[in-house]
Structures are given as structure tokens and as C-alpha cells.
Amino acid sequence: MASDTDLKLSDTLRYYSSDVQLAKELLYRRLRCLANYELANKNLERARAKNRDIIKAESDQQNACQLYEKMTKQAREELANLKVRRVAAFKKSLIEHAELQMKHAKEHVNVPR
Image (cartoon, rainbow, N blue to C red; front, side):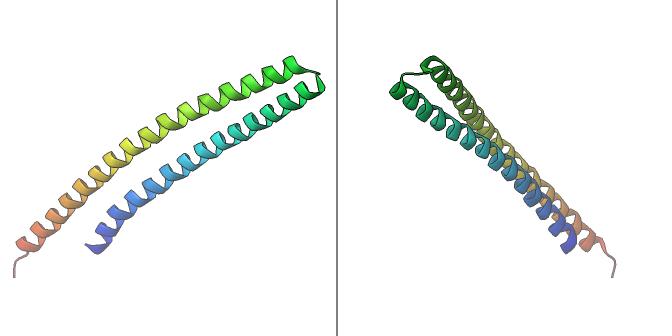
């Protein structure tokens, strides 16, 4: 019985760890986009100071900004979905665990002595 309980609970933790890893990877990609956006801003300032390639630098900065905003929006949606999935998985796990406990209790009661 203990191994069944451990298995049910460890499945939930394994599911959480995989979801958390995916969220970390998404946030890392967003962080890289932010770094690229900041670099594009610096390059634009340098281009303006030298008065060369301003149009290209502005274009690069706008593209980096759009990509960063897209990643931010995607991250918000994914993290909201993660929360919903996590709650649903935890609820399902608790229900399955309770059903398993009831099954073992019935088997224990029905054992002839």
C-alpha cells in the first residue's frame, strides 16, 4: 500500500518538475529577448551619436522590441496555463489517491480472519 501511495504522489511531483522546467526555459528565452532588446537600444544610441546607420539600428530595435513583447505575452499565457494545469493535476492526483486509499481500506475490511 505504501508503494502505491508513493507512486501516486511521486507522479504528481514528476509532472510538476517537468512543467516547472518548461516554464524556466520559456522565461530564459524571454530573458534572452530582453538582453537583445537592450543591446539594440544601445546600438541605436551609438548609431545616433555617430549619425550613421540610424535607420537600420531603429529597425533592429523595433524588431527586438516586438519579439520581446511577443515573448512576454506568450510567457504570461503559458504561466497562466501552467497554473490551471497544475491545479487540475493536483486535484486529479488527490482524487486518485483517495480512491486508492478507499480501495485498500475495503480490501483490508474484507480480509477474512
